[in-house]
Length: 178
Ligand SMILES: Cc1cc2nc3c(=O)[nH]c(=O)nc-3n(C[C@H](O)[C@H](O)[C@H](O)COP(=O)(O)O)c2cc1C
Image 1: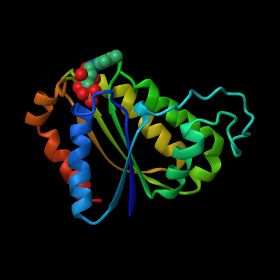
Image 2: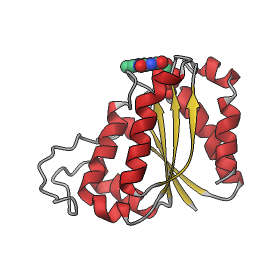
Image 3: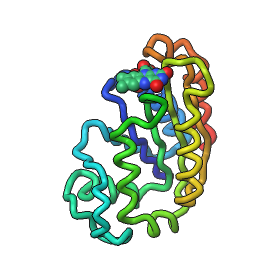
């Protein structure tokens, strides 16, 4: 299947991308077609809430989302959200990309895309991921996404910490079972 991996860290070789690379490695070994897209290195503007799209039409903002990423999302079978936790939440640029689902909410919800979440944080506590996981689950329900799994990288504050963690293997295993 086609898998679109949405990366969202400014650190190209940072912790979240390290885990994403493990996921990608095994998913490729299983024969899947992977496309990577870095939302942080794109011109993706926040949803203006202008309702010009009426939730099913072109967005007035002709940026990388409208011109490129929207089509890539339509084409893919699966979306993987890859993120560092920022203040107990999703990083703004990835959240901006999610908010822009608005212009094709119904269409996207009818596609029943598969999804997965790969998140990292410095903290080693479960609670640091509460908002991130709750938001992901609600988005899956609302958008009819079919969650395929989450890698919740606690204590992944630096690439060194992450490389030593069990989450490298978890990410690899998640890719393998796709
Ligand atoms: C703006 C900002 C906010 C952060 N907020 C949190 C946080 O709330 N909890 C936490 O444990 N780590 C937090 N961190 C640390 C990062 O999540 C952590 O260092 C992560 O490994 C960075 O991933 P990356 O290498 O993929 O960029 C924050 C880092 C930044 C830059």
